[in-house]
Image 1 (tube, rainbow, N blue to C red):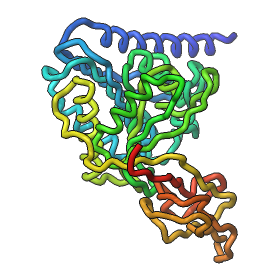
Image 2: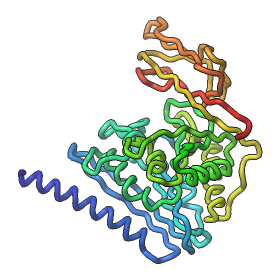
Image 3: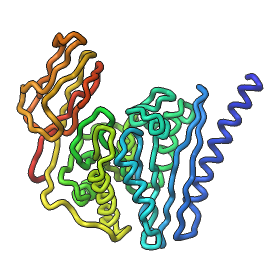
Image 4: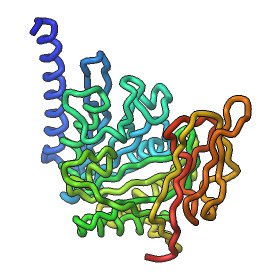
Length: 349
């Protein structure tokens, strides 16, 4: 092994160790109340470097550890703005337990305004879990969250919104993991008390050895209570969606007896289940008269794709009766893009 490679390996290893110890030492410190903001730095063999910002907020009294992650996709702005407001307004003397807040998990995506992926290595952080300690920068960030953040969390909330090209109706969701009934019951309870009208459950069949891929699915696989919010659309900041997210976090913290600033559940909760997806088989220009929240009938044509000269290449039919949770809302479409997600709505569970 060359001296240059040895030097690079030493720098990489030392950098990770120092970063890990800084989080561990702050998290395990006995002082309460206490708030500290840190940045965990990463370097990969492809020459990429970056960091993960983490705010550790320890309340006056011992209690649960509630982790909030925003910006896994850096073009989803309402979750990022909501966590900024939360960090500014939280009264740590009134907090019981600990908040771990990652306000922008994918900083490279955020600062370059890149939808879905980290432009440095072209990887989607929400498809990279559990990650790799010696992988590309995205894989390293996923690995760090998997090995340092998830293990100390009692509850993990992963906050998303509609990316640059996505129209979306607000909802809160959890995995219906029958193998871990206590964690699933708490995730469902937190979802129902979040203040969102729409509560969506996803089926769960992941084994303990399969890659989880998704951020909060990794936490579920690791035996934690985990759930997610989807709120916001089209890569914009809608203040009403920022407020919905912030209200939901306060309601969840109130339900956990961590912070007394909740406003209670929505008065008319509805439930989404049995999601189905329509995916594109061609590249072209996408058209649809539908929007997120619209009801669709089975076999209804919900959109189509043409080539650059207007020739129809593909039509998309709804596979069932349901409601559109989210959909592609801009003309460019590529093979395997999600055209839309359709859910079945129930008035009660």
